[in-house]
Amino acid sequence: MHPFTGIRDHRIDGKDRLVIPSVQAQAIQAGSGGRLYLVPSPTNPMVEAYPAARFEALAAQQVPSRFEGDQSERRLFFQTAEQVELKGPGRITLPHRLLPYFPAREVRIAGMNDYLELWDPATWDRHVAQAAGGFPLPGDPEPGDEGRG
Image 1: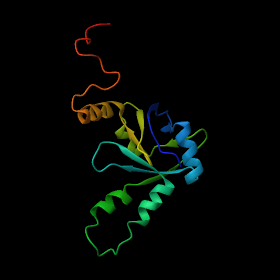
Image 2 (image 1 turned 90 degrees about the vertical axis):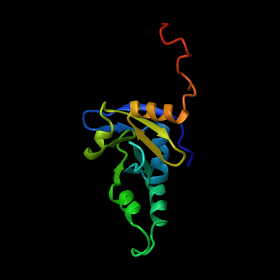
Image 3 (image 1 turned 180 degrees about the vertical axis):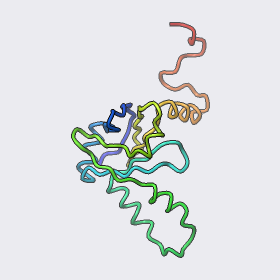
Image 4 (image 1 turned 120 degrees about the horizontal axis):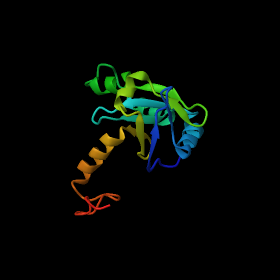
C-alpha cells in the first residue's frame, strides 16, 4: 500500500457520512477490504482512522498477559475503536459519539503514512500553527499583508 499523504477537506452530509479521498479509499478497499477502525486520539482532539490491516497488526502486538503492566492505554485504544466500512464511492458513516469532534460538520483528512487523521479544520489549523512555532506556512499572509486585499 502506498503511504497516505496530503490533506483534503470534506463535509459530513445529513446522514453523518464522510467521503474518504478516492486514492486513499481505493488503497483501503484493496488492502483492508474497505474496513477502517476509527479511534479517538488520546493526545489530540482528533480521530485516527486505521485501515483494518494496520489496526489488526497493531492489535497483534498488544497480546501480553492480562496480568502484565498497566492496561490503561490498551483499554483506551481498543474500547474506543469503532469499525466502519466504505460504502459506495468511498463513504463512511461516522458513529454519533465521534461527531462532536467536528462541530462545523467539516473534516480535514490528513495522511499520516499508514493511517489517516480526521480533524476539525479550525483545530487542525491551530495545531499546525503551534507546531510550526510561528514559522510562516505556505498560504499564510506575509507580515504586513494582513490589511491588503
